[in-house]
Image 1 (cartoon, rainbow, N blue to C red):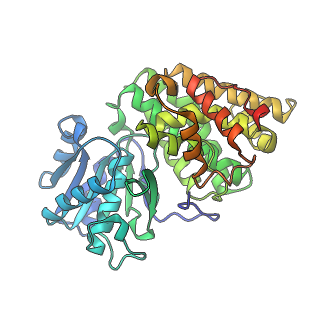
Image 2 (image 1 turned 180 degrees about the vertical axis):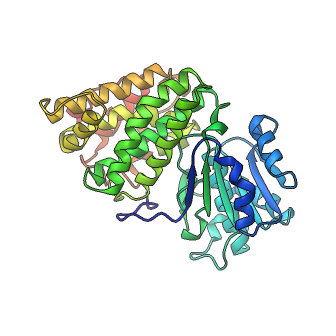
Length: 392
């Protein structure tokens, strides 16, 4: 969680709005890029997104990136493809994994090393000019200076952060998300919702990050169900994309003192090899309930922002109403419980992995084995009340 701060700093220029992808050629010209390489999700290359990029950049080299979350090995291989193209600039088109791959690949090339374990800090030279073009509305990878990669040395996903890796520009155009399937729309949207929640708890009402987080939560809770139900609803896609960007801006500028559902979702997702957003979704309600007694004022403020409670409702009651709403969203989206995707998983092993996460010791309510297992059991069964508070 070290890719977060306590002030408000925004290093990446952000262009948000329907049709903003049309700016891509001019922005590359502005950055002095003549030979761009486009690192693109392989599944998008031959579809509408790939066609749009080829129309805008007919002379660019397009490199299709295989699916799955990035690893040290896959990032090395993709960096090699970028190097072979003799590019003087890079565009990443895709989800968070592709954008993170582009960030770290640029780092390897700038440092002239082939192993992320050898990536120096600071980097010895400026990386290639870089434009990030998200085709999901959830991860926030287009804005942060860190990237997630699977590290075989620790058998886990780790955050690699270098300030120089931040994108020069992020183009967040909702039109590029119209072909995103309903399940990925739901998973990545829940990731954005979780990021906004984990930003608001430490940031609070009276901060820029806190206000961005509240607005993001409101946008996402309203827009995401509509985008999942009808992927061609451009208004819903537009609002979800804006919510995602605001969520990322809030997260990267909130105090790094609360990891929320990511305390559980990051290690569990890595262990079970499931989509990060799917894992986040299953821990949204449980972590609100877990921290209800110590963060009820903040959660109640979120509930009031969503119209779930008013000032007459006690904070604890409003917090549990919020948890119920989050659980209902996950159920509405049909996101499977963990036992349905990894029936042989050992919850005790998962609990041990969660205990190694940076957010474990930072959790507002001190965690122990019983509390961790209670949260995991809630995600395992797909229920939002699993006696979590009683277990703490």
